[in-house]
Image (cartoon, rainbow, N blue to C red; front, side, top):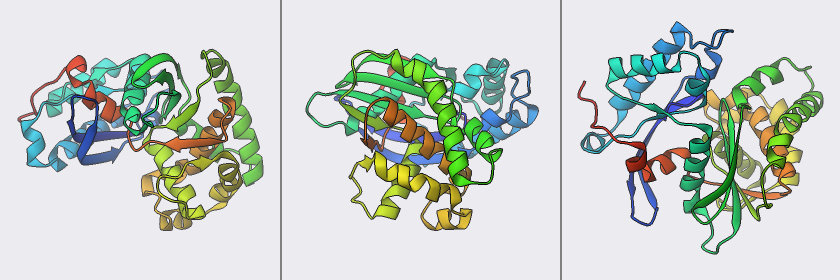
Length: 303
């Protein structure tokens, strides 16, 4: 998964009924969405970092993965870059991995499909939000069937930069960024059809916030997040030092994005009318594994 914030590799076993068992996970943080020229090209440095990240992921995968078919997808940063196709050609030439660019619609559907493994057994209209480094996808459906979706060009990496430029006051930064996020998201969310009954977030960024909230509140691992609790903690996140956040388990490469991510989760939940929501352990990569035949597979690169 060649994403805007990180490149990730998942080795998984998929059952015929859509269940996914993760066997290995690898991640390399690249922040590709920040490595664009003003004209929208991926910079040469982005090519270097991206290729190196794919090489590291391949090298770190267990030998058992080498015998399995490989599916590779690229999302928002590559999709929006004017030289995204050239970037993927360079990745393939250097690593042997041939990735395909997926649309916002496909990204939303795959995230929903992956997160569906966490849904309750009873059918309920569910919204799945995939909050990424470069874009946000919201899919709504019942069971494993997507009925509606929106893809929004709002990613956490740009919000981190905006947050860094805000006054050095947590409450002021919270208010300004929340207003901006709400104005950006509201028209797209309003275009969705019948209101969902359940809300899931499905991304690595959301899982960081899930774990952080649970750390502060001593919640059970599978407990949902209450909107009012998150809202109370956002100023705490914004004022916490990197050391404090790291001590609570936030990965080093996620430290700067905690505040912006929490604000987006809060605003989206509010716009969708939820004060209680869940964070799925699964998402885009699991969905891509389930839909690998549809997306196309290749042999493990020999180089």
